[in-house]
Each structure stands twice: as structure tokens, then as C-alpha cells.
Image 1 (cartoon, rainbow, N blue to C red):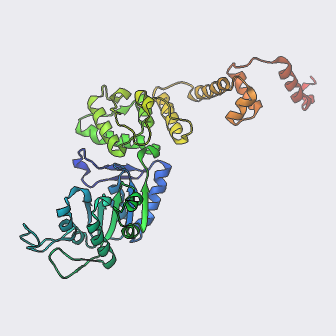
Image 2 (cartoon, rainbow, N blue to C red):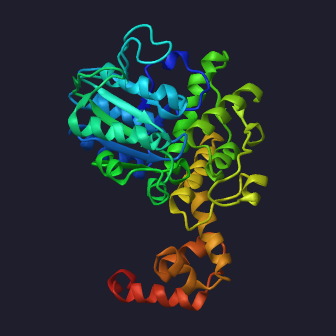
Length: 379
């Protein structure tokens, strides 16, 4: 069974800016999971790099859950606070440290003591706060605003970013020494379009999640809907997939999601694919072997669902006919493309009526066999 990562508050699931589920069905995802779990067993500061909506916080939570830390997991979005507030939020403050600070308050570092602190959008921190963060990581202690005495810390830091920190360093917006301190262990989280094997399992997961909320039962994806999901670029990654499935469940009829129910309107950040958006069920390029196999799987599943008779025979004939026509009915080239011998190919071509029975050649073949068993033909 595929590993599924979700947030603890899954029962209260609502649309938000974060990816709320990850599956590791795709081979690339399986390798990623193994790497993450190896990192989790250490106590190394970790940097997660990935696009928005790919599941960086879920990976951070998994690192915490797989570690030996018994303290809390605390998640902080560095881009959610103003410059004047983030300092006090991270490091805490004493009473009277600034206007409105009527009482002392611990910061997020102290709240995560004994556990893991996850800092998302770390690239949004100002240079001044980067200096303070670097000092906390080096000295393993924090000084509240307005205080003189440090507080010792036992916190594992996991940071995440969707920006290119190398470019930020070159532009002098991010400190190189902090980058190297954060990236003791680095996790590169691929976009969903590079983990095509995860798309349909994730879609089925979101169907299960939202079907209950919408009082729907046994909702399925049609074959063209599956192909549309696999052909799309997913610029919004897992978050966008969740939203697409949620909307499709609202508008679908007869408990089946069709391709026209999928609101695939995002603009790809990787390359413009206008044709694919106009006709989402078109096949992905054959150079993408994983995507091709996924689409083949969808087609086979649709034939199984339709209870097609002689399924293997029909698929085999379709493969041979297509290859033979594509190779302009050249037997040598067709055999090479299919990776079989010409004799085996000829057997299939005759079986499917693609070439006629050649009497001379076949009688000669029978004679060859008979020559080895003359005693059987004497009578």
C-alpha cells in the first residue's frame, strides 16, 4: 500500500494554500521517501526546496514524526508576518520590549523546544533576521527581545523555500553562511508533473475526502478524465489537483467525473502547452515513458471496466496492427520496433489476417519439420 501523508486535522479539511496530502506511488517519489526517512533518523538541520503546493510542510512533519524527538512540531510561515512582528514571533520578547508588549512572551523557537521548528518561506526573511537566525543555529540558544540572558534550546530546524537561494545569494538578498548552515541535509521536492505516478492515486484520495462532505458515493473517474489529469502540467501542483477534484465533484453527473468537469485552467510555469489545455485528453509525448505507461494503464483499466471480451487478444492485435501500419508494412522494421523475431511477427500477422497464407513457404516449413520425423509420415 502506498504511503499517505496528511495533516493531523484532516477531518476539518478545507481549501488552503498548502498541499494537504502526499502519496509515494511514483518511483521518483518512492526514492524521495527513502531519502527523507534516512535524513529523519539524523538530527541534521534540513532544507526542503520545492515549488509552492508540492507538500513541503508534509515532508517536514514526516521528518519530525520519523525522528526520535518527543517535543512538538511547530510550523511558521515566515512570509505571513510583517517585518516588525516576525522578530518577536520567532525569538520572543520581554514585557516593555516594544510598544504594546505588556507581558513577556516566548517565541516559536522556545515553543518548539525538544521538538522540530519548521520555517517555511525562509527566503522571505530580512538580512537582519537572517543574522539572528544564524546566531541561534550556531549557539543553540535564543535571546528574547528586551532580555539580556539567553535561553538554551534543543530544537531541530527544518526550513523550506520555493525560491532559488543561489540567485538570492548572488543578488545579496540571502546570506551564503546561513544557506550552508541550513542545508546540512537538502531535500529537492519535484513538482507533481515530474511525479506522474502520483497523480491518479492522489486524485482518488481527494475524491474520497470530498465525496463524504458532498454526500456522494462511489464516484469514479472516466477514462478521458484520467487522461486529462495525466496530460496536464499542474503548475499549482498538489494544491491545484485538490481544488480541481473538489470542483469536479460539485459539477459531475451520475457519480462519474468526465474530462469536461475538470477545471484545468492554470498557466504552466514550465512551458506553454496551449494544445494540451485545449485538448487535455491528447497523449503525452512518448519520450516521457512514465506518462505513456500511465495512459496505457488508463486505457486498459477502461476496457476492463467495460467488460471487453478477449481483452488480451484485442490488445495484442491492436499493438501488432499499429506497429505494422506505422512501419509501412515492413516486416523487418516492425519486428525490430516490437523487439521480437521476424518469424514470431509473421505468426502474429497471419493470425490477425495482415498477410496471406504463402503456400510455398509454409509447405517448405512443413517439409522441414517432416524431414526430422520421417517415421511418422511413412504410413
